[in-house]
Length: 312
Image (cartoon, rainbow, N blue to C red; front, top):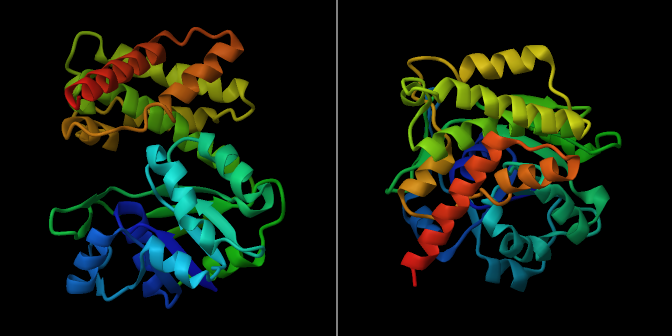
């Protein structure tokens, strides 16, 4: 099975490296700047679960277009705001027998990808790992969690997913073939949106937020609202899952913060429209006010308006 990974950043670079570690045939589709770095220094992963350093197979979008070769599986790990250009970039790699595995936050991208490439070709996926790409281009993994959940949507898992499972079984990655991958995606969506809304709105980590006068109330309000939207959308979380989310997001000494907060701190674009905005739209369609979530989304809209003004 030939696998193409869009990008060699945090998620794509890390899990692509683990596939390579297992002996998989993986190629990374990268931009020219990243191409130069990887050709000179290789792909380096620093992880408490095992370091990796190798010379990866690489392609640019122009090289892929010129080759016009199809891959069995295309792993899409871009930011949501780059989805349109990412679909154009991977299009030459997607043939009649190809499949696309997106590893993005939220759920809205599934419909967008399915419209472009076909319902039967688009799987669901959830990637969980604390990762950062350093200025030197190294991928740093900060904890001992590296989990990849995937599955076909509403149909039996095709052979390529079983092949991927066999590859990942040779690594320490916790790999799960989910019979209800959409539920798995919503489980993460509720947790991630609550975390992102709280830490981005208050510009602080969880432990710091909990020291404020209404920080815990804001966090639990967000969890309840996101969970309500998930349930009304047909993807209710279990009481155990909700209890875990509340416990994790109200841990007094936690330094946990969403990656979207780092995007704000570097004055960059964010995935707020694709994630928080999507939840607000869903809440409105349900006739649900979602006051905490609407406040968080308004904050992100104001941030984006000011960012665009500053850029002229």
